[in-house]
Image 1: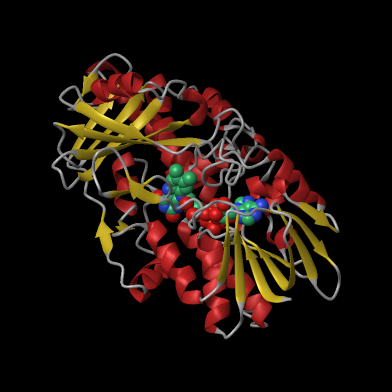
Image 2: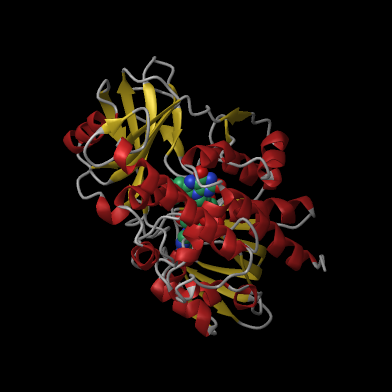
Length: 427
Ligand SMILES: Cc1cc2nc3c(=O)[nH]c(=O)nc-3n(C[C@H](O)[C@H](O)[C@H](O)COP(=O)(O)OP(=O)(O)OC[C@H]3O[C@@H](n4cnc5c(N)ncnc54)[C@H](O)[C@@H]3O)c2cc1C
C-alpha cells in the first residue's frame, strides 16, 4: 500500500507532494495526461525554439509562494514588459490617442467611473446596485444592461474580463468582474501593472522540478476513474485497470474534471453539484508569432472574437509574441486566415507568421480555464464543502481559500492539505 497518493500533477498536486516529501513522507503522483504541469504548459511554438506559455503565465508581486519556489529551483523571474503603447478598436476605427471618438469620450469616461464606484461600493460591503438589484444574483450582462453603460465601456469591460475572470457574461456573476475592477483602479493599464512577472524557463518547468524534487513515484498517462474509501485505506481504480491502495489521497484535479471520477462514498451534495455544473472559466488564449510589431503594445476591442492582445516580448529570432485573449464561445474560427484578420485589425503593420493555442475547454482533464463563478455557484466553493472527507483531501486552485484561480492559490491549496495530512494545525 502507498503512503500518500496525489491525483493530478498540476501545481497544487506538486506543492502537496513536495511539502509531504520535505516532511519525510512517501508520495505517488498519478496523472491522466502524458505530461506533468496541468494548466501550466510551457512549450515551443511556430518556427522558434522559445518556450511560450499555453496555459498560465503571470504572477503578481504578492505571490510569495511562487517566488520562493522559483528561487528554490533556481528559476529566475522575468518582469512583464510595461505597456509602452495603447490602442483601442472602438468597433469602427483603430485609435491610438484615445479610446473613443471625441464626442463619445465624456460618456465613456463617466461609464468607467461608474463601474469603478460600484466596485468600491461592493468592496465596502454594499450588496446591490442603487436601483435595488442584488449583485449576488446578477449576471455580468444584466449588470451592464441595468446600468445602461455605453457600448464602448461594455467592450472595454469585457476585454478586461477575458484576462481577469472569463466565461459567458450571461452566466457569470457580476461580483467577480466588479472585484477585478476594484483591484485595478479601473484601467487596463493598471491591471497589467499588477501582472508583474512570469517564470523564465517556463512555469511548467517549475512544476517538473517540484515533482522531481519530491522524489515521488509518478504514474503518467493513466487517469483515476474511481476512489473508494474503505475505512482503513483507500482503493483507486485507474483507466488502465491498475488498482492502487493508499493510506491518504489528495485529489488535486480541477473541479471541472472531478466528474470524471466515481466516489464511494459519494461526494458531498455541493461538491457533486459543482462537478456536474462546472465552473464557468471559458477563455481562449491565442499565441501569435508576428513580424513588424514592437513589444509592449496593448490593444483592446474585438477582432474575430479576440478582445485583447498584448505584444508580450521579442522572440529569439527577432519576431514578436502577441498573446490574444477572448471568451471561448465568441472565437468561432481559429484558422490562420481568421487570426491574420484579427492581427491586422489591431496591428495593421504586422504579418502573422504562426499561431497556436490549447483548447482547455475540450480537454477533459481541465474542461475549463481558470476558475470563474457562475450565477448562484458561490456557496459551492465554500471551504467546509471541500474539507477533508475520510481519507480524501481536496486541493486545487479552483477552491483555494486565497488567490483562487491563480498559481499562488494552487500552491496554497496543495500545501494546506499536506499540512492536514501531516497533522500541522494552522489555527
Ligand atoms: C489559458 C490559461 C491562462 C492562465 N493564466 C494564469 C496566469 O497568468 N497566472 C496564474 O496565476 N494563473 C493562470 N491560470 C490559472 C492557473 O494555470 C491554474 O489556476 C493552476 O495552474 C491550477 O493548478 P491546479 O494544480 O489546481 O490544477 P491543474 O493545473 O489543472 O492540475 C490538475 C491535474 O489533474 C490532472 N487530472 C485531472 N483529472 C484527472 C484524473 N481523473 N486522474 C488523474 N489526473 C487527473 C490534470 O491532467 C492536471 O494535470 C491560467 C490558466 C489557463 C488555462
